[in-house]
Length: 444
Image (cartoon, rainbow, N blue to C red; front, side, top):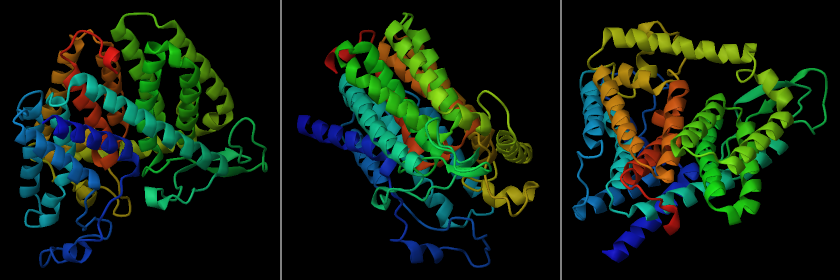
């Protein structure tokens, strides 16, 4: 039993650290996937018809199976009933959709099941709370520092680093900056606006990197507060991650980090002078280094045409989602079918996307019952965690609230595999740590 728990802890640490370098494996079943399309069903080119999986899917199912084997996991406790209801709604939504006889949407439920299974395993208490917090915090801190280093190099060089084996993709999302200036100390190339690429490390989008850095920054500030002898090396680590967060130009991540930090401070009910000073001075320094770029990007301290265009796109898809909810309030239009069905609700066929809001996606694709279940799960976690006096629970509450805020502005905590693992992983550790009243740090 003890050896199995050690192996499970090692696997979990590798899982958390490797989230940013996850690779989608779809070539194994590529040709078989195409044979599953029913006769007469025509699907647009943008609809993903492949069967795929991630190694983390296998790792999570292995951990989940281990938990069931040890008979320590009660599936309908600690919010499991709410997640089971969401999964049930997803199945029903597919069965009531035009793709009811198409196997791919049902197979795609694996990407919904594995984050839920990760939450259930983490919150089960199978791994001791103090060890679980240690695994979670150190794994994500190491992963965040690694990604921050890659992102900083990507930004200053404005090119990829040839790490395709780790999942690095071609830099795509960008902003327009006068003279192509990257930051305060870079030289101006000309007088006309030039493209500056946003960084994403080895993750699929800059916003997802922003979400990872929100977690790693919160963990860094936590250790900075609690481990005074480590402050000399934690301060530059914090500055590196904050620099990398700035290079993502992710508005949702920046605001989410501020929200999570404020909630953490409020729940600890103590004034953390040194930590507050680190955050304020580092923020002022990074803000000065990127002041010109963020003024042109907009959406933080001012409002520009670039920020306005981004917000208009979000409102466009939100309106489509509301039409879907109005017409299909009970079963939704079908799990994973928003982009496929959106032309039927007024979207331009050439515009392929989804609302940048996980709450609307749940209601539009799986019905209002799934949204109510999701809100019930959130409420259960908040109510139980609020009673705890642990500093670690306060930190995890801040991280969880940060991702809930991101969910109002972006869809990756639900639709991107990496984002879902970060979100439900943090929620699972919160669910496991919420019962104790003393600090876990002494054993960390």
